[in-house]
Image 1 (cartoon, one colour):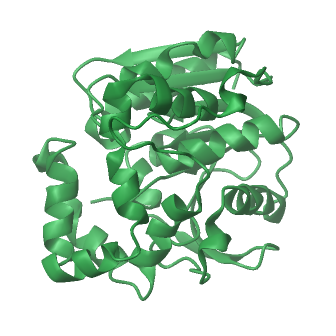
Image 2 (image 1 turned 180 degrees about the horizontal axis):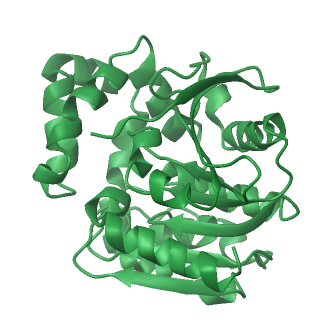
Length: 299
């Protein structure tokens, strides 16, 4: 089990994040963002490899592990972690950086790259949908809509009560057995349970879903289609690598459809037989794809 140096960083956004820091501060910077229900350890297999020639920052995002957990759903709208990201780069004196994101971290990475192309030099996405493609798929693709019904469950204000009844251990087993080879995460279970058991952690993590503007229609429902789905969407002006575990049961391969029209400088690496948690399900493949693409870009 690899442990990393964690620095407690107070940001100008008013939160404090634990941040895994590795590599030479003078090297090109790369920031790694995890998703639900994880921490910087999403990237436990990539940090050391990337630190060979990068300055690596992998924060525990707000609401997760021992990082700050501000009360209130409004503190978890996507603009808040985007602001944390920029504040984190500012704290370390980093102007431009490569940004990597998985799951919710990928959602924040997409938004940050769209809003701050002057700061994000390169973007690497691992199993995290583009915001327009995702929302469109929830209206137009029945399989993706069905796969995303868990979002509605997470938004239920009584969901923490359900977790309390079954216990964190049972929630862990149920969460990962459906999505991955359990043997690949078994040794990490005590770490997850310790992080989830922090005061307010489960509510804070679930608040990311509750604060999201994404609409998840019920199966069979025919709600009014948002006009934005058929309106022009600004192209992403950042070179982008998308790595996708093709066996992802939560975010289906339909999330790759139409991406080339939204991201002019796009490379897609499809990983067959790999599920949602690609960074630790297929660490060698993910690290190789990242380092190969960065090398081609001269970084």
